Length: 496
Image (cartoon, rainbow, N blue to C red; front, side, top):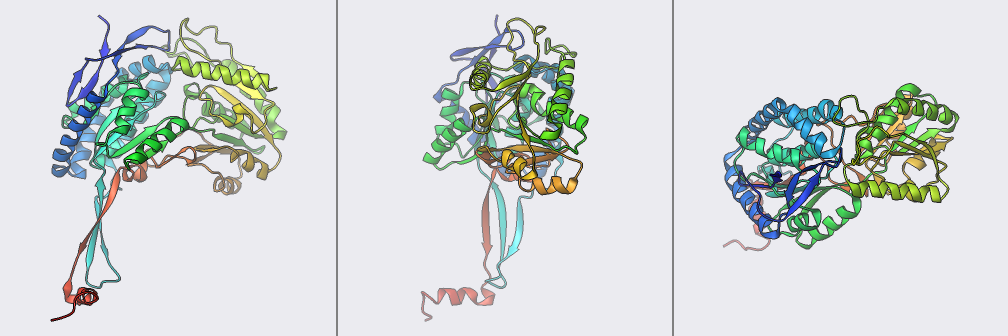
């Protein structure tokens, strides 16, 4: 009998309802079916999370929540190989990436939130206008958070969408992508094993158009955390405005890697390849634009070709394979369309990797380098979300900065140079939430992550990522001994 992946509500998995087939992008094989949740199921999950929030928040502390998070990290660590297998089977990313990067990184992020001492529930203040009075400023939880996660890095995203809000005192209803729900489901199940109360984190499966919409539209949700495309993020923000929900949006990117002639070119080549071809370019901060000093461009491109030729295509479930699959058929079609438009408009395919060893019936796109492009063309301005690098030469520092900032996005950037003074100067002028210098894609749980411009609003990770799930409460302690209140009240009330 085919496996059905259902909803997890109040600690129990439910498999009733409409079913959607779930296929592996590795080879097209059927993994099972997921439930496409309706509005009634979504509201029931929200109600369960509301009840759990009311019970849990009042009886928990930051310390007690961190103990549960620490226990969860231990459980996930013990099952790391299982998580890696599920992640690669479901997404098509290489098992080497899941085993040595995605899963260990997510575990380290869980541990960070279990151990950080940066987040404080409250701080004391005095009021300079009113001598003798004191106040408390509290970082109160939002309540019930709807977390809507993307399909590209499902386990890491589930960790980011669940652990910080829970640490801040919230409950969560998470909707993983209907393409890649497996590791998010495993995480929610392991939270129960770790001792988190039933209902504190509920999971509903389904498409964005149905289940996601029901979550966003609900009057019983207090905040929405969404990661996905900029057009969809705009719709989320529009809908949230109708009932005044707080939103945190991590959206699209068109990130540049800027390479100067004085850079360690061999190191930079590896970093640029890593920046765009990791996860087959399916990362929001993927550096899909190479902005390179003209004098070294030809040499740099030849070095890239040499390294790309050495990368092995094949079955992503084998440790020898270097190139990941494309996770969804729709995304593959989008990449195909953009490449065709580019070539029709005069762009050149400088290089395209042979993928003959990839499994039949899987979803694959060759690592590709595009040249002869101009800012303003579709492929130069729009997020590709695939293993495609566009290349632009520059002659001056000012031109490099102008090219880097010349899109509507501002998620991340990389700068490659031996001149660290120049790197620092340029980094402060790049319109992006993260700027790496002589590195790329290295994420720290202590560092806030988010976008400028149309790459989103709000932050994930770091103390900023925890505070995102809070709202400020000020408590004022009066002290009439100073006589200040009598003066104030006297404006309205005459003494008798």
